[in-house]
Length: 269
Image (cartoon, rainbow, N blue to C red; front, top):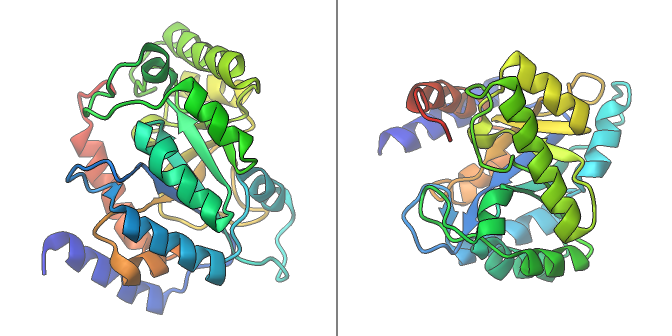
């Protein structure tokens, strides 16, 4: 048993002691069928199986619907819900993920890093971007919405205020120009919170903003500009994915967040 699997197993045990609360679980996907060994590049068959589970065993709702539920006062009547989100805008999102989502009738939000789509250049980790025309086709299904993941995928705690504002405004401009709708939702690159000035800029421009941490978002108790999301990994398998979809494995998320702060120290994007 490797370290990652051990952490998942311990986290699952912790869930049995402290059960996940009722609320909205937001899952993060990155790549599906990209053909790499990345921890967040899922095999298409595994992704298809996850969607089948979600469609039959969970209440999958749009991000917009989840925000309305989270704004409501706490109540014992609230049902658990799952929101599907994707980061970046790689070509496998439109080529592989969207057709699978359509087959299962499940909505999702893509947070797009617009510079790479606009310029047709690879993301820093070597992935090809999708195209604006492919994204328009995805949105036309009625299941996909497009939010902002910045323009340059820069970490917003490392830019000055003017650079942050210019980067955010460029992403808004391009999505509006090519998709025809102003993006209302935002996700911080690599789930790294922005500086205080960056957070103000984000709050002024978007109705919601997302981080990570694998926590359940609770109605009446969630800052929707700090939405918690749970990353889906290829190492999850059926058991751990089921736990994540139910709002579990928070301990793993907390430990991942600590590791990320070390890993991205000195990085710019």
